[in-house]
Image (tube, rainbow, N blue to C red; front, top):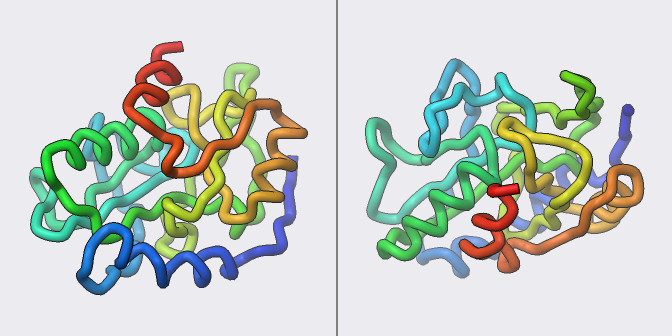
Length: 186
């Protein structure tokens, strides 16, 4: 399937102003390129090799073990959200959270083992504000570890994805520890 989207960078531009006030008072850092064999901070998998959305989190006064900010992830359901929610409970303050924005990409699903997978772009320009995304969950399209949350900056793109691949949409604030635990244990 080839899907041409029309929102390109508008969602990213609209989303960049509000996060610093919501997640912390420091200036918002820009997303970084996650290519080059970086290992996921949640599970150690190489980012970009397994399909599905990638993500990164910048923290105010903390950084992930083994490298400077941001923390980086090859999956959202099994990586970014688990890490973010756990560290939020520990008092870590995120200044920016970015995820792959499929509304800004031309993409083709990859077929592996009879299952469709989303691509896993790693370039800095493929990321958008995680808090402004509409996420598709419970679709027939997989990510790097199976069930995934596929982010779209344009809610219409998320709804169209649900029409084509099933599932339902949720917002950033709907993603709770309980939702992640139930979803990733399927």
